[in-house]
Image (cartoon, rainbow, N blue to C red):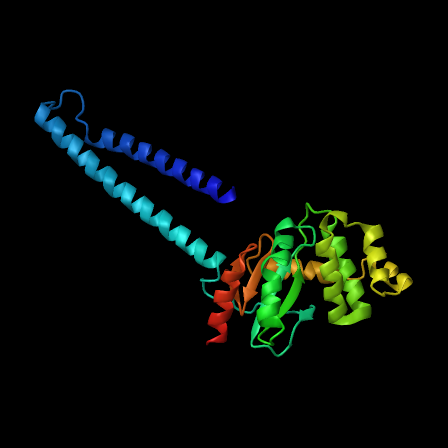
Length: 258
């Protein structure tokens, strides 16, 4: 739906610009009152206007295509790597010495993030993380209009405080599996169900102990060009959105073969 809307807007802009050019050319080429208006001159005027319009349309279409190609390259990891994308001190899933680093900026209440969690991620885990080729670093990017996203991100960090990175991803998995049931009571219940000390966890969550850590992730993500979720960096190469496994596979394999 979003891509269709963008294309419609681009088409409308192109048509509007063509109309504007036609008006301008008409004012430029059409003889003023008292000028020559013979049919031969009319035909020449029409031909020159047609040629000018064709050249303009071709130039605009070329520019639009170049912009679309650039956007597609960035969306699917074909753009230039973003320099200095940090793993910070966030949770790592997999071998910390793996040759490829996949950094995910995500939101626990985001349906597209859940789509990645249930779609491409299991195949990435099976083919690359469990085989020691890729490590996944999860960084928080809760969106402001998701009221439960930031508390969930803080809760995951509180759980990690007690259970480490392995426990973090257990809790992470539970959050994404229950995206429509996020809330303070459940965040606390699930932590205890997974073995956390209730008093320590509740104090950590209620006091927003890791709120500044979550906010730091957001700030750094924005500095790297993240504007929505999920967003990924494969050795610095940006991939936007819940892309199919094949997109990640291509970029990861290219990095492994370097």
